[in-house]
Length: 238
Image 1 (cartoon, helix red, strand yellow):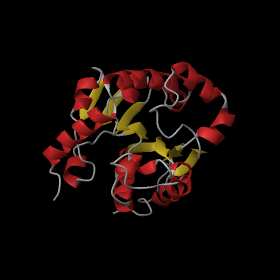
Image 2 (cartoon, helix red, strand yellow):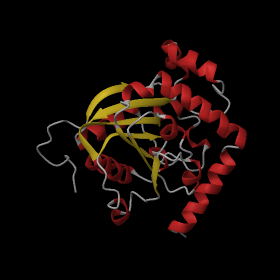
Image 3 (cartoon, helix red, strand yellow):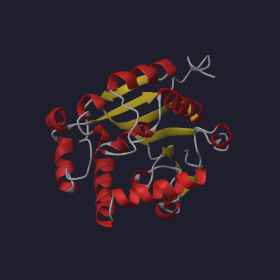
Image 4 (cartoon, helix red, strand yellow):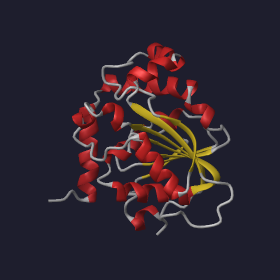
């Protein structure tokens, strides 16, 4: 039995509505504001064209400062939560025909807590190739992702987690595609916001005290760059 495209949208909507109640969703917005102001914005220029992949409830794309903002997500609720300056595309990036509908070239692509939902490494490669194609030369891909090396005990507590990645395996595939590593933090944020760092004040303090990352960090942060001079197709191009 498989989930059709239409049913997949309904499934995602119900799944994430069950996972985070209204109070938790409101709290996440405040946490993202702190994360952006104290860390992410310095990696995203205010004059950048930004694409958020799998941005769900738009916590990042709504609050990041940028010249143009785009979001790709299958969850129909993303349209409801997006600010008026965010352009939404409900596309399945694993469908060649659908993903070719998004032709915009961007300066930054942001992906948070998305890769773990993929079925296998082949799907991961397809997503990374899409990012490579849509990034301008010199553009950056920013990733926040559970690091299985430091979150293996809790990793499968969420029913939709399938593909385990460590900072080493992700680094390897990114470099194989052709990206250059700019920033790699193996232990960055805690694995989940549920029950941890639910206060913006605590998160702000946590981001300043980097020694805490070594003990509490279950997610990695990776920033890679598409070289300014690209003389050939990605190493594993189609």
